Length: 95
Image (cartoon, rainbow, N blue to C red; front, side):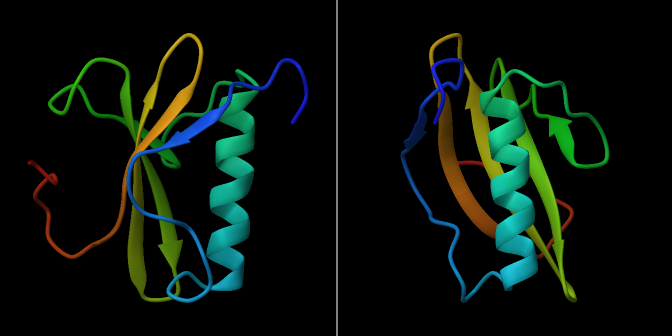
């Protein structure tokens, strides 16, 4: 981590192999690193999720024949990882 990287705060979930394939885990790490450094990443990798909350984003990772999602919130001082899950339906995860 460099001085310009925002810290990651994990509330739930983890990205590890298994269940993520090695390639999907590397892609997730790459996307999170870019976001931590303030690099703009847009569709199709990251989708805004205003229905979940302000500054919430969904990282979209295709893993073999599965759709993996990492729900994050981008704050000014940190990136909060709220949930890591396999997407099985078209509905948004709601709690």
